[in-house]
Image (cartoon, rainbow, N blue to C red; front, side, top):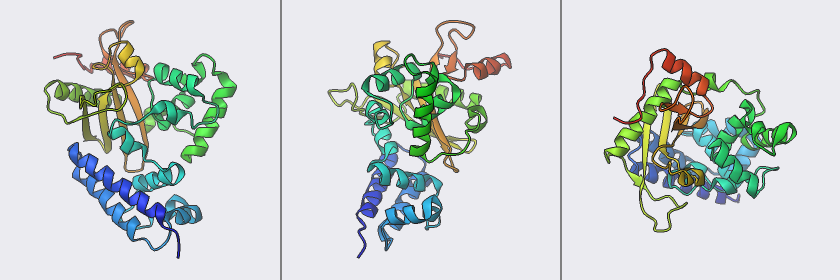
Length: 290
């Protein structure tokens, strides 16, 4: 008889994901997707890890109610025993520890990357590794960045040539307006709140979270809870937006109020400042406060 302990782990994490999404008033379609995938994996008469090893992601997607997104999540659980999306939605993501799983990144560099690049996921780090921001971090350089980029490609299963982020992710106007909607609803007290584990010794549920769908993308928005945001008192200004689509293209951006230069006092997507300048030049408008 085959060992199906991984099946039970996957099913349990998917059910927990569905419950957290329900509590956060997320899209019912996403909630049902996790529940149905949990039922499929639990009923599978072989170990899902063996299926993954034998047939890859395509073998998982061939199962009933398992799409590209849930298949990628199964792959992550098989590799790490955790589901980072679930940790993130619970406010339990510890990016310092996550980044240290990448060869070439130690504790000091992990903290430096979070503070300087404003990323807290492997996907976000991969984007920075391809657009030049990682290489520009002091102490990294060309060779080290190349090694980290290669390791991320192995860990995330992405041995394809990266496409330009601006062509591969949501439009700047969509991102800025998700940011605007999040800040307005958070200020009005209309969003559910989570109790992040980081910098929250009392376990207070203070961090508003918003789920939204625009133009084929699913978004999760919440204020930044990084050490840097707390140090600079920007926990009510910096907004982290995670996004994914039906093809499991995903990533994240941090949106801030610019404090200098031609974009001063405007909302800016970090790493896409040129796109923001073009957006505002064309007449796009996103205000800081209303």
